[in-house]
Length: 213
Length: 181
Image (tube, rainbow over all chains, first blue to last red; front, side, top):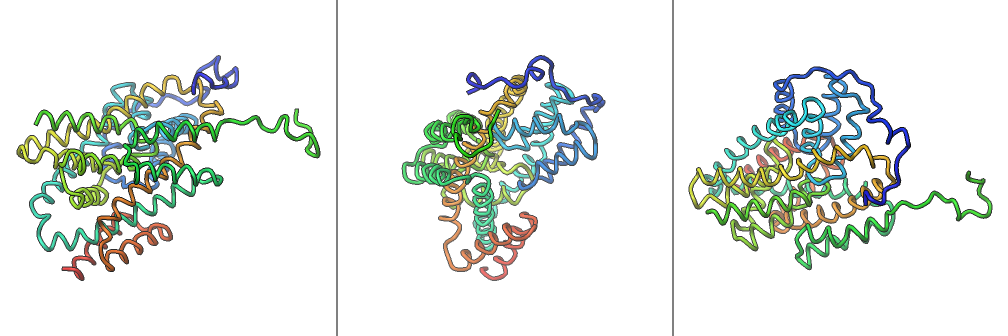
């Protein structure tokens, strides 16, 4: 698809990013500290708004002109937004090593605590008390996932065909038991074709509408 | 052991590059592979581990760490941690490398109209995948009237209040412990 992409404004092509921020000096330790904190306090929902508040508004490491393209990029690419943003922001501040430090600091503390919880579960998960607690936690996790269906659906559904796309995707996983990469390879071309860029009414309105130049 | 590590690396690196819309969209494949194909765990264990990862700090897809841990648990705790590490790196590194390199040509097409086409195409697909994931979690976690009520109350709380999901899951565990013990 990038091949077919119409080129952006000439000024965009000619010069690089037009944002004019002072390159702030940020140490690797500061990057590590921030992403440790984000990793340990991130629980899904609203995390991108929270990261923006931290790095743009509070610490002023990036301007909005620098942050927003990064957010647009990671939303388009696979992977959790918070993970992609750590790589993008780390690279922006300190190059490749900044990316590695940001990603590592984001993942290491949760990795340790998650492993500890895992071993606790393997040792005590079969007791009656653990069963009772987990019955509630899994039911709540199910409700949480269901709420994400509503959130994602609210953003996704712009017309009846989007509902069809949702149901096709669901059916391919649920009934055809296809793995997610294959489902995406099947549905994505259809979905991209449906949502392809359309000329903004240059030919269609012959009558009535005001002239478009 | 080597075979399990390779399976973990192969599974999660392919899922890493398919997780359009976040890690939760690949949950159905993760479940299918670890329960149905490789027999690393039962469906109940998968849902337990998924719920634990949701209630623990970290990006939402730390369940991969727990899947790696469980898959290699038969080889001892040290190998289990190695399995967790392999699974975690396989899930998070490929997509991160993609972000790193994509940043370089992003400037050239971030204004392209195709960007919105792709975004609008990804959204319904990820919704369908999250729906399939929810279905899998529900089949195992909602097995009685009390769990159904808790699931619905949790859904309502998430949709209509600003409650912290971790607090909500902790409360559900406590209530369930008091009444279902």
